[in-house]
Length: 225
Length: 257
Ligand SMILES: Nc1ncnc2c1ncn2[C@@H]1O[C@H](COP(=O)(O)OP(=O)(O)O)[C@@H](O)[C@H]1O
Ligand SMILES: [Mg+2]
Image (cartoon, rainbow over all chains, first blue to last red; front, side, top):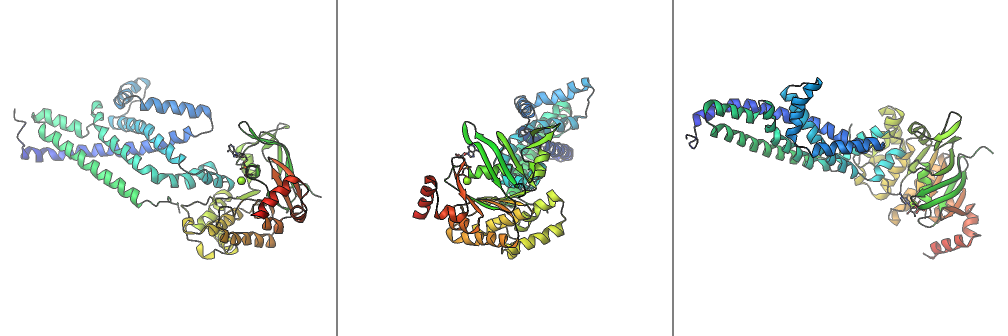
């Protein structure tokens, strides 16, 4: 057993590799977040649509996604979809799975944010003959975004912490890199500790960033110029 | 006499089991100013909200400016209006709300220019020029860049009026526009309406509890109770010689205050 003594030379040697894998982790989180926000918004708007069919089928899709494990969804997209002729790279699969999974959660955040807008705002928009798209774009969402920031931020951090699951489909993100380094050198302590520290640092930075965004965000919402 | 600009024919309106209008008939002539008075819960707001297409109807027909509001012709019959028809019909109407419903995230100017720019495709320069004119009209030329939350109630409501006027509606619906205001702010809002009707002709339908205002400004006053017009006529007649007991009781309660 040589695991219990910390090897600084080894640490400096593997750090660049871990950091380059961190870029993959961050990229997957960033793209996953963007997709999740878009999907969340789409789900939330479909849930509010006048068509009962659309509303109910969206409800079940969201429920389905939320009640099945992310790993199952990742495997499904990676191993089953190619049988239907859709094959994607590990990164694309990961982004897609994260976006879909967290989109389902975010849709609930967005829905309650939209529900928080007073009825009078909708009525004024209608009395002024704004289209439904302009009403969302100019009146409702600009006011609904601020209250959505904390919960959205928490989900994005949660997503970030779940990116190691993408190692299961060979995406070379931080955990996968640490595993490879560990098995090639028979030393796991340094790579896994580094990964843990990096997750901690990024999570804290993200939480701080989100708090700042929320704090700086105008209370009444913002207006597009 | 030309056709009425607003006409309700046998209109029915329910909220679930509650019947608000069972068989409602009502006409307003072009450029007529009609005040609606009556106890709370009698359906006054619902009447205006139906016209503004904020509430649908459960029976009957409504005509606005010669066209059916809630129905449209299709293959020789009338069918419920689609959103395109409603969009077209809304251009005739503007509404000022009791609780202002200003957009808090937009400047006063943007509150006023938003709809003309988005809905009518008016250029920013032109929309802003008109907004400035409207702000002068309501006495708030210096507040163009303020946000609604920095204004007093009376100022907010004057912005509400300017915002509705920006769409150049031919019919203006005012639903208790001074009810949410402190008493000392009521007159600055009513003065705006007084000046407005002096300068331009509007068809105006207003729900109000300011009896002196209804008396001075209206061509006709309707006393509403339980979803029906109990009594209507020229303001002098309604206020000085009401015929119906319910009108008398209602007015007495007001004068008593
Ligand atoms: N959205 C609604 N759902 C259920 N009932 C309503 C709704 N809006 C109004 N009502 C009821 O309809 C009646 C008439 O309301 P309203 O037109 O607001 O009266 P008024 O403006 O004369 O005070 C009231 O009894 C009210 O409770
Ligand atoms: Mg009312």
